[in-house]
Length: 292
Image 1 (cartoon, rainbow, N blue to C red):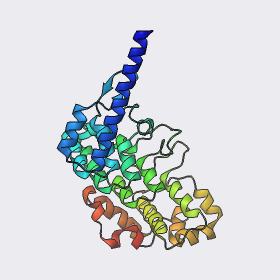
Image 2 (cartoon, rainbow, N blue to C red; image 1 turned 135 degrees about the vertical axis):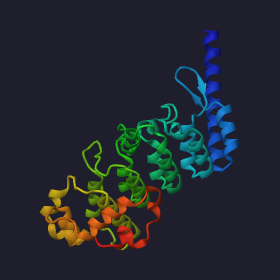
Image 3 (cartoon, helix red, strand yellow; image 1 turned 60 degrees about the horizontal axis):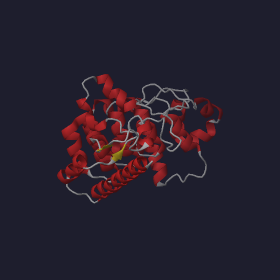
Image 4 (cartoon, rainbow, N blue to C red; image 1 turned 180 degrees about the vertical axis):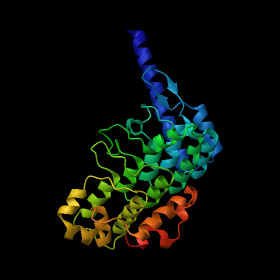
């Protein structure tokens, strides 16, 4: 019995130490300490207390999640440069159950916190995947449903639509993310945007309304064919939806007529622009500035 109490006390102290060092690392990243110092901390301290009784350091993947939360761009660049796609591996479940439930937690966090600069670095690093299918699979992964996080089961594209992150959405689509992948409930990203647009009480000239129009426009530019669940609702309420999205866009979305020649030309033009230059599109090429 005495030995068991001693082991339990030792276990508690070790777990408590992991909590202290984990908090210290969190604060160091938050305070934007230099990347070399953060790497010394990451590789020399124990931050996890695992179920098997072992303590271990943070992985590059877990450190990158901290860099995303605190927008530590130099540290994110260091991790992605040194470790490439290994820095995008899934974190341990002992790190955070919600992060482990997300299929691509780094993409999800970049979108949620609107970390456009780090998202660019992540997307550029995907060239490190040896197989093209692996890169596309990473972009379009859906996580498992998590009771602690509503983002579970959604792709990064869907999350960008839900949170109205048009810059993130453009980068994801431009790097090959699929605009059609549905969530666990069967809704495509276009369904998500249209559901938000269809809600009453939205000020048409607000920043939120502009974000919705931009997300809708970017989706449509990367969707040569329209596949979504809400088409029937648009058909049943034509007057309402024409007022919300415009007559021309309504006819296209409802399947009444094909997209205009202008939109077809825009779709071709956007596909011809290198992905790394999409964020520098001139204003007249952005969906918020032209009629759908």
